[in-house]
Image 1: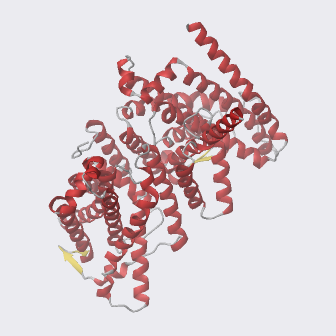
Image 2 (image 1 turned 135 degrees about the horizontal axis):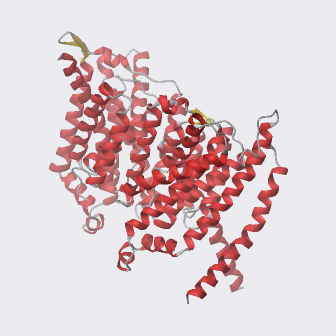
Length: 292
Length: 336
């Protein structure tokens, strides 16, 4: 029974990280109609920056409690990268064919993957001191780190905040207006360029936050971004590209299937995920909650 | 009317032959001028050109961007490895005989699913399916060897007429294999030329340019896209079949989606809006990649920068840029 609870918690942990990545990807697609292939790499950058900062912090003797402030810092640094990338690289492509948009983000992916290697080298970077700083809970005779519960909580809080921003603030209205009709929004006097930068920044922040909160539980390694992107694709395909609710449901479905897969059919775990994605695309091309 | 069209087409085929003859002669003379390593590199280039040529039938002529062509390349390569492991005869013809139908059937099957969608959803669907193949190759290690891959020894060519087991086997193999691949490359180019200039090819371009009008003309759009997908996947699969014995090993890397990205990159590098673009792109990309890998540890960074600048500055690729420069020159001459 307690094994079941632990697996349930593990699924939720994975779901919360996946939601952060997929929601960012979905938000960016929803607003600017770009599928950002470099999104997973931005998630990896978040993980690396956080792990690196944590290492610095420990070396400088910063108190353990203060180290938790590094999590939003790692996410913010990714948001900054996003704010630079959008006007510089992506803006020239909104009017051009989709092929070019995909290719430019694919080029960006290659650049980011190697920049990570250039800056932090090939050895995994870990920040497990953060995880050890929190106590370990006893659940029915089994041990479970309290940090994992923190990750789940951050995922839930992020989902609520994002939902509130998009549906209950003025900026959310601007965002949705731009996403529905860019030219009309522009004609009504909206600063579409600014909305794009901010939306891309938020999307990148989410990816960075995902990386930042995951790195204490597992080390940052090369290639983590590319793998994460593909899983995030599965999530948004199941839930619907551009839908926040879809990203949430998709993340939960994927993480539960994956946890069950690792338990019961480890050889086919990944294949089953992609098959589910392909099936959903066949039956409902816009995903379970997509609109367009 | 039809006769005149045919005449015109014959003339264009003649024109192609006239333009290609010097290049072909140069390619035939090439191995006696350069060393074995360079010959090997040219073979890789020709194989990449076949893969990009096939890929471009979908992107350039049908208007569908596939991000999953690694699957057909990989299935071609793995089919060779399976034949080696389970069936025995190490003959290239045998590999082709078994591999081509296998690739054709799988691309027909996957294509049937994928062509239900267009645009970005088509891209994601092809990607998802190729990832299914990848994860199966990675996880079913008792069949595929997992991440270690499967070994492919040097096959005999021309039904066992040429064998390469002696001490100088490698050099001899590379030279003979060069002509073998060159032959298949020429066949592929001619076949593709005929396909894109046939009524079928014209129909594909009509669908690419305006789906609604094409439908009003009575074209069965999905069927056309499906056949285009089948042909495209099969060409890329042939490239995979040829690649396996040259590389000597098949690993899941060639099934991973980033390899699909490299095929897209190659087609774009040459220019996907014209026939010769992907051929040039495949060869140039092979050199670019090889020298990037040799010169720096951070070759991926270099390739990424090249790709981004290319998309920003030269969206029509190398061939497109040359054509435009020539046009501009011609106009200037005409004015003068």
